[in-house]
Every structure is written in structure tokens, then in C-alpha cells.
Image (cartoon, rainbow, N blue to C red; front, top):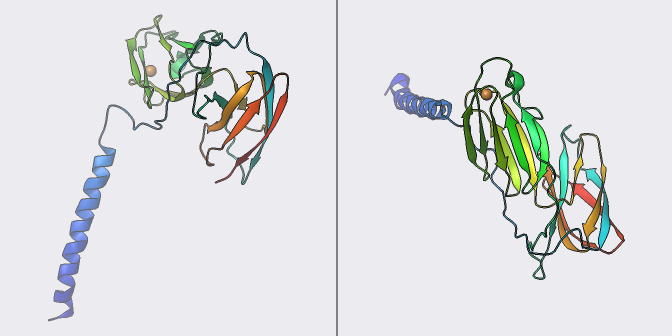
Length: 241
Ligand SMILES: [Cu+2]
């Protein structure tokens, strides 16, 4: 057998692999109506019947350390009220913050990032100056399509579940926004350069403290904290990879 002949089967295998790889790339690039979901971790919480307004309250104060340089992106620290079984319990009844309005002028969601509280409403305005239609749909476990609406129209949505929401427009692929829906009002947003936080007016009790990162670089941190009447609980949040 000549050298050339021995190489032939190898050439065939290489060719077959190339064809397979090309097919795989094509499948990935195939135009799909929706982008791939970026996140799926939303959660429903029981409200129960106790009221935040009637509770004895304390403060949770913390510092955040990073094992390496953090992205210049916000981090949310939020608390989940625990029940007697140490699992997420009833989150209580609180005053839901006012509805926020999101502009779509110029083919951009503005604000393009917001932290909401469960049950808070968002109004999407098609406030274009020209006759441009927009759509709004969400990806993640919080999934909804608010339809296509014309200049001057708007759509509202109640966020009943907690978690990350990726907001998109089916007409303009570059339009996107990101929301985080906190389970209750006990949360803090750390801007890109912040490394400490304070959460005031937290009803006394046991909580699980969690983090959420707009741009995930670290493992999310969690720890149990106890909030006491008029007390301050200090926490150290360690963000490591
Ligand atoms: Cu649009």
C-alpha cells in the first residue's frame, strides 16, 4: 500500500467530520423567532397574611468582597423570609411600589435595567415620534408576549413571580432590557462600584440572603440571617468564582 492510499480513509473521516461540524454550525445559526432563553430560575412565593407595616423591624448591613475584579454591573442582594421549616415561607403583605414606565423611543428600552418587587407593574410605552411598531416579550421562566403595538399605544404587565426577566422586541432584534424581580421589598442594589449595602425596615425573623448578578461572574452567595427588632445584623458577602 502506498502512503497516499493509507491516507485516503483518514481523509474520508476528516471530510465526514467537516460536514457534521458544518451542519451543527448551520443548525445553531438557523434563524429562530426567539433568541435562546438566557435564564430560567423564577420562583413563586406565598404571600400569607402578615403585614410588613405591622411588623417589628430591623436592619441588615453588609460588605461585599470579590475574589477577583468584578464586572462594572449591578448586583442585587435580596432576602427571602424563611418559614419554621427553614424553607422559603410566607413573604407577607407589603405596599407594592408604583408602576414603572419603560420608554421604547428610538428603538431602545429605557430604562434598560430595573429591579422590581413581586406584584409591581411595568408599563411599556410606544412613545416613538414616528409610526414605528414595537413588541415586548419576556424570556426566562417569566415568559409572556405582550403583542405588537403601534405608536401611541402601551402595554402593562404585572410581575407575579420573582426572578430574572430578559425583555425583547420581536421586530427589533437589538432592543433588549433586563429586570430582576425581588421576592419582597427587602433588597439592595449595589451599583457597579459599590461594595457595601444596607437594607432597612426588614420585619424581624429569619431570612436567607441571596445575590443576583446582572452579569454573572461569581457563584451566587447565600447565607442565613436573623433580623431582630430595632437591631442591626452585619453580614459579609463573599463573591468567589
Ligand atoms: Cu421594537
